[in-house]
Length: 317
Image (cartoon, rainbow, N blue to C red; front, side, top):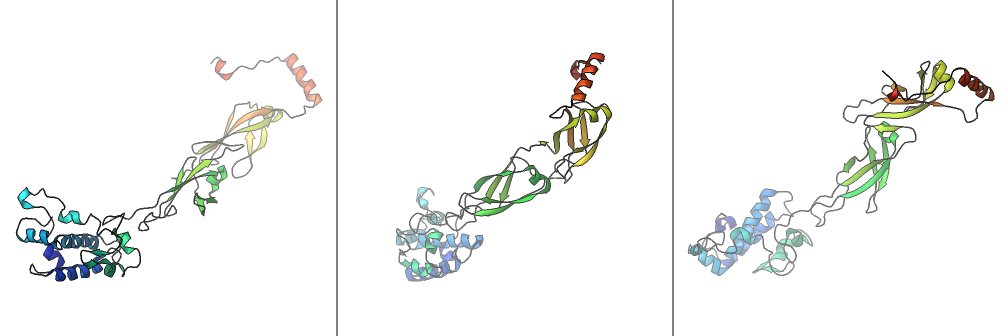
């Protein structure tokens, strides 16, 4: 239930129509939303004052209210309280038929001109906007950004162009993942009614395949090619890592499919900052041009020590 309309306007019950208009004009200037941005209490009071004036400016409604035939919400009491309009409802309707103009004898230009051109429309007066139109946030802008594996390992800054033509520098954090969306607050479209905040820019990351490393969670996997002499005799070979090449030890008698684990050479965990591991799968490789002596040796080897490889899964345990 709304308060007493005379009290809301600060006038006596015997106040003239002119006194009521003057009181409303004074309070509307003080409480207008453009003069009190982000002030919920002032906004609510402004609505109550406007609704009180809506009731008292109408001689018939005022007469019924004074006679107890209508309550402060504009409902006719002899209809069981289910009348139309409403004290609170008056504030939800547009004031007047045209842009600015007058409000039953009150020149709204006197109020709106304090706040500059268009203030009446932003407050919801006039065509297209009921009183109390809310601030609207701008829409979000979405864009995809292709990133490299090294961007997720070391972090990086990439420049992107948004759908509205603007360019932004996007910081890619260490540990970024494929499909992850970065939210850039306030970098989206402007508010459609000019009263709310900008939307956000949503940048979806798309990780490009790497020529050497495969990503599995925070770990990396790769194939490490080794020569037959290194596999048979053992030795040191150079292996690529995201941090640059390192030397690894190949055990004597190593075979294709063997796995070497390089601790802490994988990707980053964005939550802990720890790094995963790099797993290198051994792959035996021949040179592009095989030495004739080696060919002759392997021919003798095959004759003297015939060997047919068996898949590990087929071997007897």
